[in-house]
Amino acid sequence: MDSTLEDDNICAICHDNIEKKSFANKCLHEFCFECLLKWSKVQAKCPMCNGPFTAIIHNVISDQGYEEHIIETTSRLNFTMLAMWRMDSCYR
Ligand SMILES: [Zn+2]
Ligand SMILES: [Zn+2]
Image 1 (cartoon, rainbow, N blue to C red):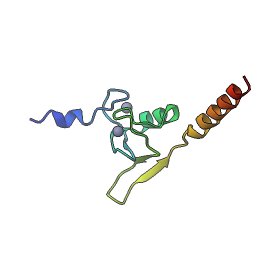
Image 2 (tube, protein in one colour; image 1 turned 60 degrees about the vertical axis):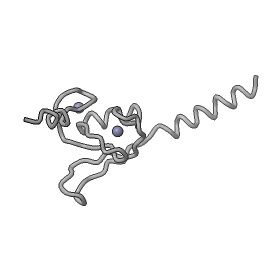
Image 3 (tube, rainbow, N blue to C red; image 1 turned 180 degrees about the horizontal axis):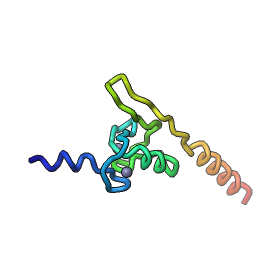
């Protein structure tokens, strides 16, 4: 009857049914675990709302029973690259 319920189970990354449901820890949007993991390696921003997140919540059994996969952000790397770029432009 309510087809919107089904849409909720579609992953915005692979556009297929969500497998191993997992959530971005900040905005709690749902994705497949594999998809979100791959995505987070490219950018730690939610593909749906563009909100940054720091961990993937998965294996959710209850409110307290879940696993958190902390993602290694590339922000440190980006910051270093930015700092290097700034240094570089100073020498000009
Ligand atoms: Zn997916
Ligand atoms: Zn989101």
